[in-house]
Amino acid sequence: MSLIHCIYSSAAADTNLSKEALDEILQQSRTNNAKAGITGMLLYEGGTFFQVLEGEESIVESIYEKIEKDPRHERITKLIVEPIAERAFGEWSMGYPRVSKKDLLDIDGLNDFFSKGNSFVELEEGRAKLLLKAFHKGKWRV
Image 1: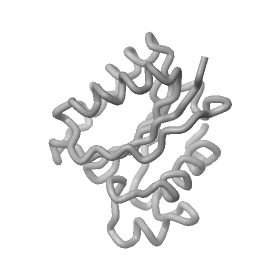
Image 2 (image 1 turned 180 degrees about the horizontal axis):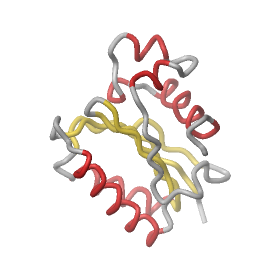
Image 3 (image 1 turned 120 degrees about the vertical axis):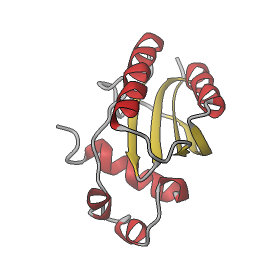
């Protein structure tokens, strides 16, 4: 099996996405991902998403194609797709560490980026990897 991760960002089409609507998206994602053998993580802050999908290449690509067509997402940007030796979020069908703007400002290498009012949709590959590293090994892994 060929494992990859796909990391993307997007803006919520509904800028007033309620906690209930987000919880529904998470529950649906967790159920579907568990059935498909997909793991990963989702961050949501300020109307934008940062998501990591891990799994078999064809399945990850298929899920990403569905996300691209999902009307709940706008400005979808695929940041990184690459092979991985092992899953970083293997215990999460879709982990959702609650993150605040202050949490993002505390991440070394990203504090200047987020302090300027930038969001996940302005990330590029280098900063996406810093964010991934922070959540793979950081305080949110409890």
